[in-house]
Amino acid sequence: MASERIREMTDEEFKQWVFELVDERLRDKYPYVQHSDRPVAEILKSMRENIWTPPPGAKSSLELLREDRDR
Image (cartoon, rainbow, N blue to C red):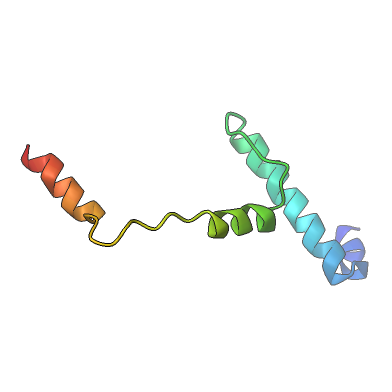
């Protein structure tokens, strides 16, 4: 019975099982999306390290949108 097997899992085994299940379902539902084999933590770390900060005095995205709209 599945509930017995789940009950016997450690927290780490359960988390891994859930991640695998979610990944499998996402791959089935969105086969056209490229999935990465990189761990999510690694991707998030890379995103934090590569955040681009605009220089002081640069226009905000709202200002750029308004400029584009008014052309």
